[in-house]
Image (cartoon, rainbow, N blue to C red; front, side):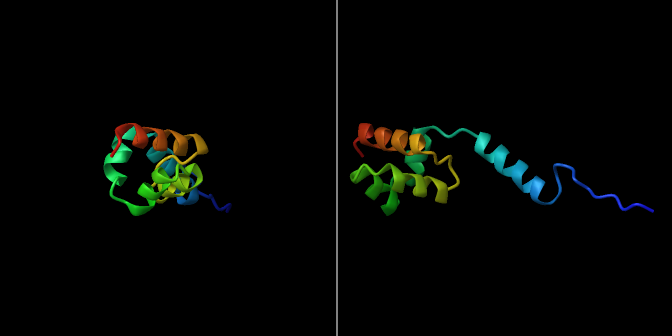
Length: 83
């Protein structure tokens, strides 16, 4: 008798990948992210020094999309708000 392996999208690592992809599809605007992170010291430091690479790490730590462009966009938004 052959053993059948469950490779559906809801099992094991594939389920984790699917959940991660669905989470990343939930778009958060720079305004929403700023409201959540504006009191975080690492976020404030990234904005103060205009450091997109550090901002990428902050965004990643909170589970947001964290490309280089995401970091730049977030810094630009934070500077525009002046908070």
